[in-house]
Image (cartoon, rainbow, N blue to C red; front, side, top):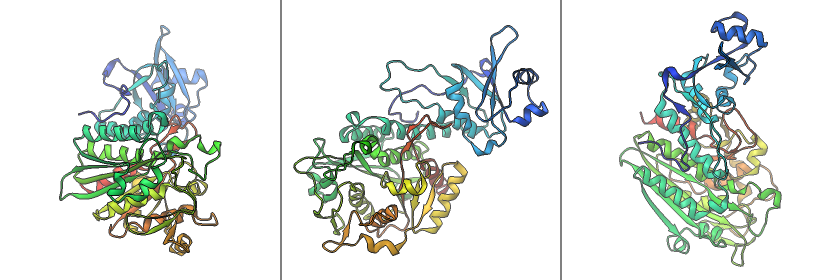
Length: 463
């Protein structure tokens, strides 16, 4: 069974064997020492080719046809492990293979695949693209499932809210569950109050598209119990504390946490890992209407803690609070939540390096190792209890928006920690979910963050 696709697209890979054109991936040292194909070397020297990082030089045949290509890796190829992603956007259309490269087969293939991503749902004309043959010593099935998970996250984030509101996100969640024969349930609208999800209802009630809680279960009882929770704010106006126009431009990506846990769930299910998997996604649109929640309101959460609303634009932690409390009731072996939660995390670490928070030192070590092994960057930040006093407030148990504006990503994590009391191992990821500019392995736009590292860690933990 092929991995699930939200948007069907052709594979970036081929299997045409000898009919493919060769790519010689080289460093400057290869040119200087002459340790590559002699025809390619002669052409490179005549063209003054220096094998600079990401540079491409097409090689003609004796009769003037396209015969192959040289691709520069620069002096230190390890600095950009997915540089081959550039090939997917710079090679002429056709079928190619890597003839020589000082890179592992998995890295060069995964890099090419990641870089091949295009979001063309709203384009009248589709690009004609090159394909690459996966080397025989690469794990083709695992490369394809990782790409499917990343592409799912990217597709969901890139889709504008007019086509990715709560109803459509539920449909994508349902399609993913059906593809892998997972159990799926949903609680919608006022039923959230009946089932004790008051904060999810509060944040989403002003939208014409009703708030909901999505849940998926897959795997076998008795296996390691893993729960994934993702923030699904399909659009965030900021509520009555309305955002300025410039801050709303990217708010279609505020469901990036949901998109990423769905991508991670895809990888886990497609690999048939021996886990008891549960995926929980609270889904809302933070809109403005006469029944929108207000600054100064106080609401009781699923866990019983009361929350004072000091800013309606700090809504993500509210819906996560109910979802985490619900997940925690089952006390899974591992709980991961992912959310596009705070601007403070971007100030601290920028858009490309997502922080994670956990008080499980063994888990932190394993995630850091997984990050390095997969070249999927992440960074541990402190759950510093000295700031816990900042989320306390006079008239309720806690506030959703501490005054002062300092350590915002830490206080948000401490807020969430209040709702996880039974689970022995929990980590919160404050992701951005967006690549601001083109990189070798990404054309820019919606982005999967940390899910390849998390998949690697989970896979290693259940072998």
